[in-house]
Image (cartoon, rainbow over all chains, first blue to last red; front, top):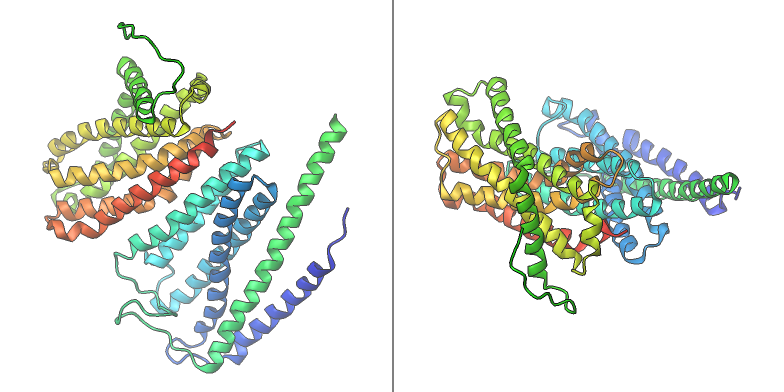
Length: 231
Length: 236
């Protein structure tokens, strides 16, 4: 068995440190929001997980395209890693959002464009895993996976656009779409906590993807060894 | 069977259009003999409408607001039934291998299957609409509504044909298609429901332009994407 690369070990430690710092910044350093109070603190992690969740889905669609062109299994491993890690992060985003929405909107859930799109996107990627599970041939599994991530990557933004036909109550952080939407205005300290959370989750995301890609490589090796033994 | 014997030119592979319509003709001819697929879709649609009748208590007031939703749910469910069946007959009887061996462009197979799937869906819709009109006393025979249904069905079968070609090759087969198809087809279903609902509520044509534009965009985007990806799905 190959040992864990040193760079990955360092990244593990860095991930834990930035997560700790980000938690401190979100819970203690950032000032309490005037209208929403303490519950607003959940927002820093909510945005952090949402950012890496979306980033992963975009990366998965891109690596799907690269796989279809090059047929190199390396890109399939990356695609699975990206979807798997992002599905978890995106689930966290939805849960954190719900925790915030209960006091802010007085409901756990509303069928707002962002929430609905988030739920649909999550379902697309759960379907992706079910699709992969049903195929034994690794090459075919990779091909179908790539095709489906691409379809999902195109369909999710269109879903968002379509549901925007209805009115949204979700606060807009960057650039309000229209005047009557809530706009969250951040003070300097809040901005520090906000951007640090984005940074921290990006590091954690890279770390997890690296682990997952490495795991896929090891899994493949085990498969091959098993085949050798049985032959 | 075709009886006129024309000399067959073997050196040139047929054009895309010719090959596409040969596949459509094959599917329609097979269906006209057995009516397996259309009858299953049709009976299923009527059952869904009857279930909705009890589930939603479709009285006059409720009917106004939910007709579009009931219709599109029915079409979507019946649609997956047809898509599954049409692709699995190809797979089971080894016809897919035959089609793949034919010296035609692979996209002809995609367009052929998509057009025949669309035809089955439209035939079922053409029967369900009058039945629904009679049962619930609403007039669904309107040119604008039929246009919306046509656009929605095109988008639905365009992506459905690609995904059914994938799902028949998996272990879970029929079960998988709706799970793969529904989340990806949500934009087209939503826009269709929205457009049909507004039309039935007596909205002006200009009010449904937004969902109509989305339907057209979705159709164009997904027909071209599916056309490009189909090669990767059937390759052996």
